[in-house]
Image (cartoon, rainbow, N blue to C red; front, side, top):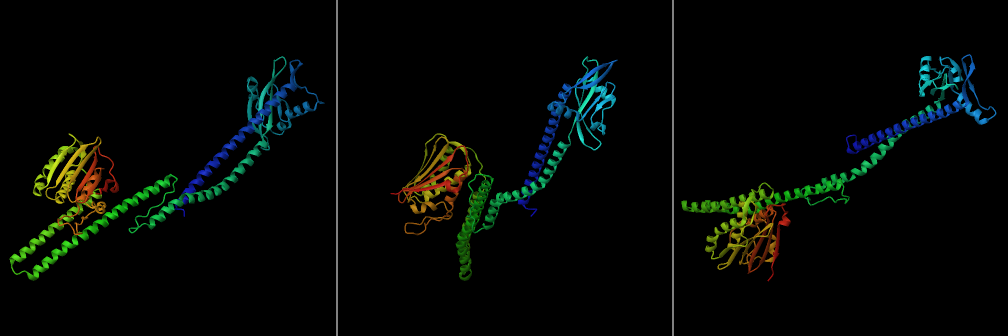
Length: 494
């Protein structure tokens, strides 16, 4: 248990609570001592005022002086005040010889030495000191002088007050604090244990939810508490991590599925051709024909593997764009010219429209050329003789818009959401696959290239009338969009 986070938090809370309690107790104790000392000093100042009112140093002749007390014995108030002063007092002449003293000084209360008495008489300030009697009782002493009426001599006068009651009060307070601190530690530990458990409960829920997540249920997410605190941030971060893992697992699963699906048929064909050749070939020409056919299928296998690896690397972030300043108008115009010969061979009219004179931005030229090549290859392939294909580029301020439009056979609306999926091929008019051979990865590359450039692609198509791809790319770069945001499809119904 001592290794657990709950115990650690509780121990820290208890330690801090104990330190605060001890600090507050010490502060109150110091304040109590200070207040009691101030109160004692105030009482002694009052007694000193009473003493000066009731006692005089009178001249008796022949240079002799004597302290005389003047108060009405019949007046209860004056008698009580003088008794309070005389409870602890000491009077000495200018030589330091004791003249009068109370019982406390007679019984052993520490007196000032003659030298100290003379120092007090020479000073105009009251002297304060703490002494103890023979029984160890503390006293606070105020020492000063009382001058004669002719101001020719000064008598040393010290009055004091026992601090025994104050000491007992401070001791009781100290013992009370010492007794409360262990109780406070126990209460602090219990309270900290309860609140630490409540605070860590969501963390335990996250851990339990994480244990339930596996390769088969990566779609599971932990619901947020809606408090906006650190735990919600932890939950959000955890869910984002699971989402990234889900994407990675799906990509691996998709790659495995694609490889097994696309390679199974060519491998079976190659194997069948070689087996047939072994059983039926009679001469070198038959073997050569079988080998040539197998090599063609193996080359197709190599293309599929290379394309799949490249696409998987791209989608997992292993392919880094090499961006530099590029004028899309110039690049597209040059690249479209390279497709004029294939277009003429298919009896298709291909033209380039320069809607803006310049359209510069940060792009990866190789990837954009791959994107346009895939779109133009598909357009030429699915546009019948006599059809038209146009490519245009326009500067929209902070965005470049590229439009590839053809008058080909078009794509039915039900197939539009899937055209960017790997190996997806739109069936022919009678439900048969298209006769043209292809890997079915071209548009998957197009979608990734657009997404990697933080752009969007919109597809509009109508069967029998053609298809239009509209691509928008930020000119100054931007945040890479997610797969869902990068590609949008929309069918135009006739």
